Amino acid sequence: MDDYKCVLSIGIRCFTEIFLKKLNLKKFSGPFDAMYSSSILNVIDILENKIDKQDLIYTENIKNIPQIDVLHKLHGYRTINRKYDNIDYNKIVNTWHKSFLPHHNLNKKDDWEHFERCFNRLEIIKKNKIRTLFCLFFHPKYSDDGDVSFKDIQRVSNYLKEHYNCHLLICRFLYINNDFKWKKIISNEELTFIHVNNSSWEFELNKDVLNEIFSFMNVNEYNLLKYEDMKI
Image (tube, rainbow, N blue to C red; front, side, top):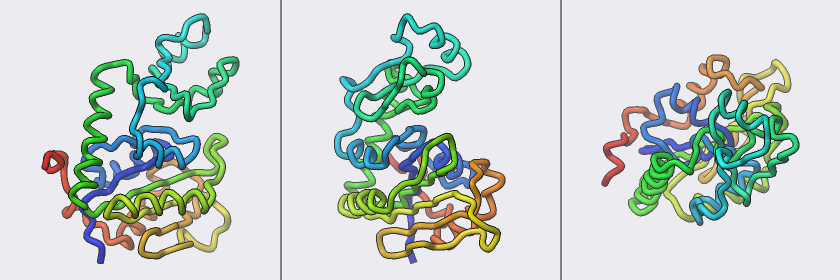
């Protein structure tokens, strides 16, 4: 039985972190909590290289686009990454929610230091071989996110297994029929891939299924390390 000490999101949107938090399984922040990954292979690059300030564009510094001020008032500042983002400035309203960091302005000292702490926690987890369940949830019907290929999932799983004492849980939220609530597609030593028969990104509509899944994964909330434990 796996005795997980940490449960961490690796994307691809903030839904994973939101679900984990509502389930009381998020005990501290990680770098991928509110990050949008246009490709899950970006996860490997970020784990390898962290975030390079030279790659960042801050929307608060973008001028001469009238919609920007309105978007800032409605949704807040964004941080765009040249390496990962394909932002069409002529259609900025449509692509606003596909920024690398939709909820953080890394031009602010506090936000940058937040991510430094998040990466430091990952180093602690890696160095001390702390047993971790990495979670990646995706909703193919949300916006135009689309599906994630198993080939890419396997590459991320292989990378994580090589560097961490971990298991990767993938949950694909997609309604296809009424015959099941959720089912295992793959379950092995490194990876568990689960299809949730529901396209909704609302927590309350997935709550019961998620509780069943984490029970199946043998995750015990009371075994999880807390924020103060991550200073070891």
